[in-house]
Image 1 (cartoon, rainbow, N blue to C red):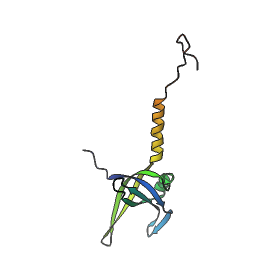
Image 2 (cartoon, rainbow, N blue to C red):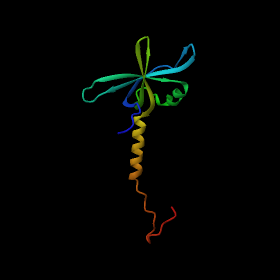
Image 3 (cartoon, one colour):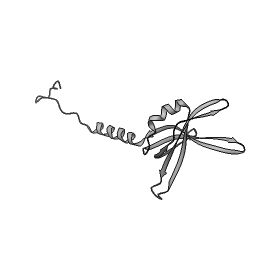
Amino acid sequence: MGRYTGEHTIQGTITSIGKSETINFSKGSFERQTFILNTKTKSFEFEHEYQFEITGQEKLDMLADKLVEQSEVRITFYIKSRQWNDKFYYSLVPKDIVSLLSETMESAAGVAAEQYDEPDTSDDDGRKLPF
């Protein structure tokens, strides 16, 4: 049995990306951005929307080019929770975002490379020609 890392994976479409904002509090500030992922199950056509939250400028910079509205993605994330005033608050925090389009294109390129046969560059006597 594998070690539990607390990571989860989900696939869907990014339907909305919030603006980056600065959150100020007594001990400082931090950058935050949210986005919405829509998932739809093929068997029942149910839609679910999940809000993800990216915090910290370094993480925002790392994931910024992967946030594209209407793109199909797979997100590896963890669930962060905190208690405040006897209530629990939860955030879905992305660790990585992978575009399913680029993954499909890389896979197709790999298949094409495997299917490519190098042309025969030998002369009539079977000697390799220099091209």
